[in-house]
Length: 289
Image 1 (tube, rainbow, N blue to C red):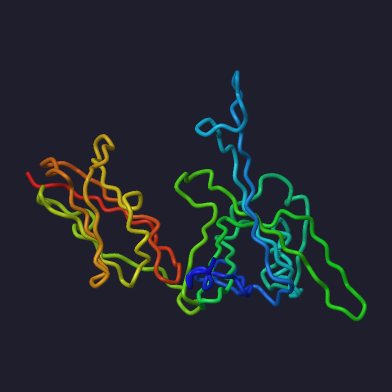
Image 2 (image 1 turned 120 degrees about the vertical axis):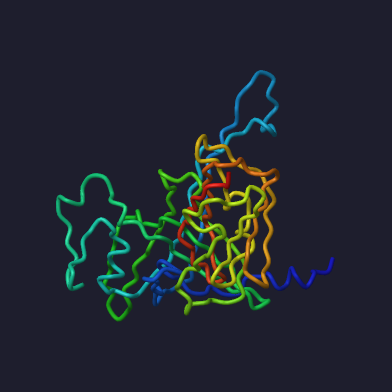
């Protein structure tokens, strides 16, 4: 049976680049590396036992946990890179010394976690698979080997971590992108109508959000645009649309809003084409009498 052109174009042919905090202002390429990279997702599926069970049964299996890991071998022995493998250790302000003392014991602070670590893998069609692990941190033991007449190799095993305070945050993400865009590190901004703190908004008005640059249209979803009544948190149903020509998302409530009522419109998890995520936007407004 012949392969389709799409199947051929999606054959992975090369390991690309690895970035720390890709799309952020402190983005940095990790390297040089050797031997490619390995992305692994593990899960724990629990089968619910019951009398007369024949085996694994659809509908009564539970996913208890999911973990994601990226492993690369790097040759860069700079202290900044070594600290990625030892996030509990401290790098001094001059970047000249890594030290570890009793202060490293206890709860791991938030700053030890990277915003993300991202790997690109090229496919025959010329595009890339972009694999991103969020809240990333190395948990492996550290080994530094000095080899005679050879380069020292340092394995870096990084895990993605769930966010204990945000159930909407992603653990990892795999997407198709046309290129490794390294120049754009600025997140998009947005102008909303109504604006924050607006008053006397017509109850039949649609809400619009116009972005400063092209965004990923997959982010235009009901889960990322939420309108609620401020008094009791009731979610307002409506229709969401997007115009790429004007870079504008429009939310039209299913029914007229209540008069003289405070509402909150929340916009989150919006990314530009380079993957830079916009800061969460909260718009408070009050409808007309």
